[in-house]
Length: 175
Figure 1 (tube, rainbow, N blue to C red):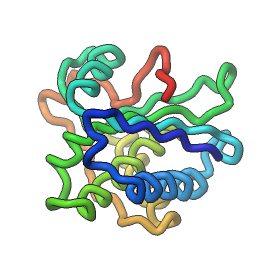
Figure 2: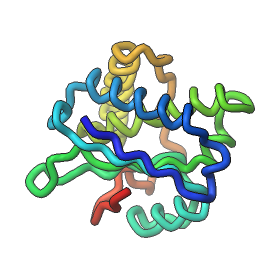
Figure 3: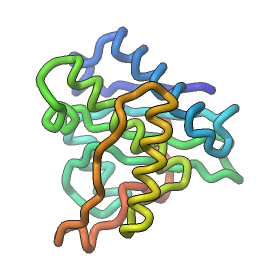
């Protein structure tokens, strides 16, 4: 599997070579653990961005002009043999990490990657049943990949009641 990792200039000072390598290894392990379609020969693009770029991506693909932590862009299996693309907002990741510093950021990044890979494998959390199934899938692949088990629960707030999934549609970007 080929992982193409691109770090935007806005967040590059926060992400050194060692962290980039750890993120790539994490993704490779997650995709193998997931066993999702095209996983064996799949390409996967990951773009790490700041708030401004994520707001632009979120607006373009989801119609919301707010930052979000992660977006998944599934590949079209007919047109693209890859698994898809992932965009991570490093500014948002740092705000919601369990603590300050690189170790906490990496832990949060792992959780976001688990979530994104689940989306790329066809899972969603549009309703309660889907959310439970997605969480079980995330927990299973995290265990298989030796990553801390996700605890997120996809509760739907009043704001979320009209919100679509965090799976983007439309043209993919290419890192």
